[in-house]
View 1: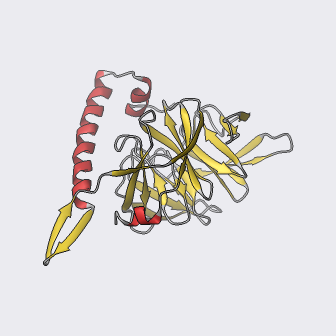
View 2: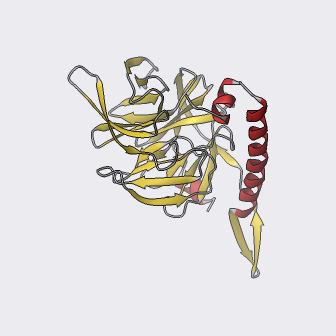
Length: 277
């Protein structure tokens, strides 16, 4: 299971130490968030650079919702189905109504995010920091092999861009790009995001959310610069901690911790995203 502050927050088990660490982190994150809002957009007027706050969020347009387990470590969409990472199991879900079609054994004692890539299901482990590659056998069982380890002590989010695996770290603002054949680190990208959770790639931007800030929102990250291009909020407040984003080629599937639904929402328009540059 996730240890330390993050696990305490999820379970509500606040020791004096964890509460102190959380209070300190919240103050730091609030200050950083205000700084980010003030600095993300510079408008030149009469030769003077003026900072404007842009930390507002358009509301995502809901297509429909399906039932959800109420917890999440990651989400992916592959061959017409949703694949959902939980700590102790991986679920194959019918996106039409939320029916659980299969319950599969994950790669380790505590499973983090997952992504289908090159015909295999990749799965992160929180318990041993492993990066695992799994294939389905004739019985419909996943057989995993450990291929490497996460660049940081833990990895929370996982996706791919068609060529590279993309990972987050542990309470991290960084993204790591790995060669899927060798698991060697290709590059590291510092982003404007904080405590990045699950990831999704839409062919242009990397989408993520934050465990500690921007509650109920997702944001688009420029894969070259790490800049946040826009914030987008779910249509209601019942899913404050988003930790599951999947792109099906047209729209997004979103869920999280203590979240009663998986939201199917329209992808924000490029005009909406570009307006936040």
